[in-house]
Length: 193
Image 1 (spheres, rainbow, N blue to C red):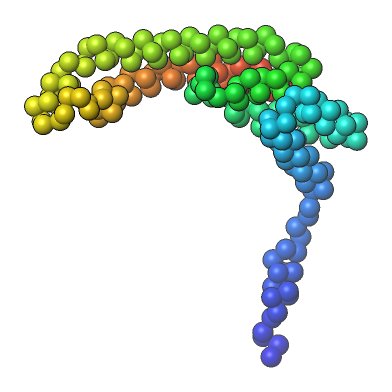
Image 2 (cartoon, one colour):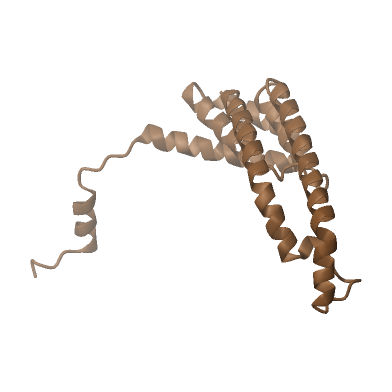
């Protein structure tokens, strides 16, 4: 009977010597609270976010404030990507508004450079699509017709050959712009604290 150990005894043996870093747990908790607040701010708007942020920051001190603000900022920055500038979405404006509140207006220059970056990226992608469409479009339409496709239903944007060429040409462009985007995100992250 002495050879059989309870689950509790086994768990105690395995965790013997482990310590808990309460400060690190607190930082992670505050980081997550900041993420939650910024997500809620995206729904409610910058005014409510500003009020909630100010109230929460008053309750915290020192490194706690930094962890909380970093969490809120990281949630917002993580939403910025090269597909970010979609006119149908209102999220870019919301994210920019909350970043302005979080950084106390210090992010305006970076956000303006990001707007320019997204505009240039969109223009280059559109030009690339147009050039590929003009160059390959007639050949691909003719090949689809020869294969028995209905010319009225043919869509170049869905043709696998077109998509392959587009992806091959889009990858270097995306890589170039992603490097600029990553640098801007780093600048934004420095403004949270």
